[in-house]
Amino acid sequence: MIRRSSPGRAAPRRLALRTLALGLILALGATACGSADTEPTLTAERPPAPTSTTSLVAPAPAAVDPAPEPPTTTAIPLSRTTEPTILVTAPPAAPGTEAGDPAVPPPFLPDVPLPDEFDDPGSTVLPPAELPPPPPPTAAPSTAPPWEPVTILTSRDDVNSIIPVYDAPNGTRLAFPDGDLWSYTFRRNRLVARVLQGAEGDEWVQVELPVRPNGVRGWVRAEHFNWSTVSHHVLINVSDRSVALYEGDNLITSTRAIVGKPATPTPTLSGFLVEKLPNHSQQNGSIVLGDWILMLSFFSEALNSFGGGLPRIALHGTHIPERVGEALSNGCIRIPNDIVETIARQAPLGTVVNIVA
Image (cartoon, rainbow, N blue to C red; front, top):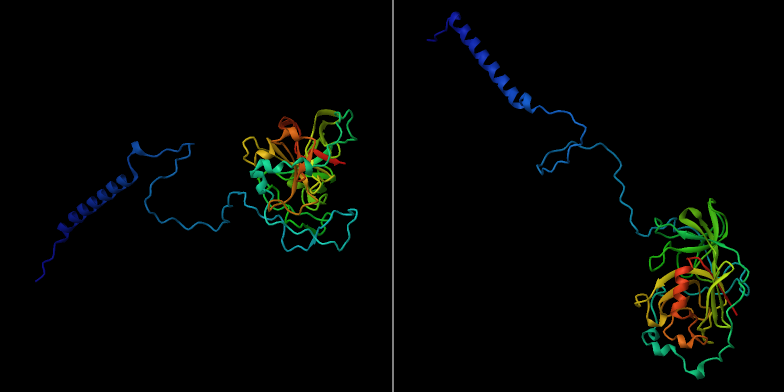
């Protein structure tokens, strides 16, 4: 038999249960929200980044473009490699060149290796019987050759890539026998070029380039370069075997020099200074090259390669200053170390170098 409670007894019991439930709810709410003393306040300071490693399921982020990668110095071409190109085997309108002349074959290595003779300084000193007769003594030049300042382009520090060269603005891409023109040298120095046409602010500029064949020129976009003007110039006379540095019309220093021997003569060309390499402790070469190596924009015309690399002509120091005035080099111009130091310190990159006979 089921016993039923009377209505009079059930009502107070239900009221007590409801009161207890309400009290529990209020207590739980106070625990979750905290007391008035711990209530958070708004500040203008950015909170520190969380350091907890607690694994939480984060909401899916909105679809956005990924953050760009930081810039690097990885070499990336500035233009398509599928462009049609014209192989440059001689400067435009170079005298004595024919359309069917073969291209200069490329070397195997960059222009940094040195032949074995540089490991043995004695091997670079030819015996007197193999030397041409010395020239008569010459006095320091009293007047400067005709001269005008030149404009030089130097690749910007944030450009680390191939520099496309064209035969005209928006023209056909040029290709060179030794490969692409880069914005920096093998030794990570900046590319230097001499302006032939154009002015600062132009989109395109025609330049003379420090690549083979000697004297090659082309059009590049000016946005990849910084501009400067150079008033220094060097005159090298292979007949007198002399070197003179000028700033405008003022002679700074002059000296006798060692020039190329008959089998590998110093080329009579006009170019410019493209790289200055200190060699006081022989970190860039050997004792044979003296205290400084001043790389020029042109190359030997008697050698296709040198020590497995490019036969670039340089103006550098010497370990045999007593032999200045002789012709015994492989085409480079060697001068006493104190004079090459003066030129290295005073002549900026882009300094014009004229070699005459």
